[in-house]
Image (cartoon, rainbow, N blue to C red; front, top):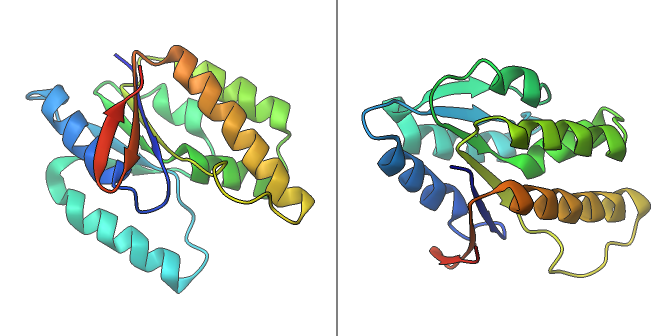
Length: 164
């Protein structure tokens, strides 16, 4: 079963998704596919919090760009954390929107159990072309993933609301 957790920054979606996949994995140790690239100290501190919280509960794979290739090797449930950062990485490496969405659709056809994405389209319209491209791509990615997911949860204030 595929499940999408979506919500704003600090909405609780990561913690909720981790709890959800651990409960649904049963006796299997799930994978945690971290897509983040560490570019600064503040982001490293955020990652440290996530690492501390999940400790030995997951088999962690850190891969910022090769999402499809990496997921093809996973035999247990996978939490992909997060698609938004993966989109950011792909744009940084100048991969076209078309290729990004094609890879994401191929990922969604795999037996991936869970994905997490930040909701970035509910704020102000960004003042530069790259930021607008990112927001637009993020919205398209969310719509694509929601099509393939059996369940979709919107997260806010540490709570989840089932949308699908």
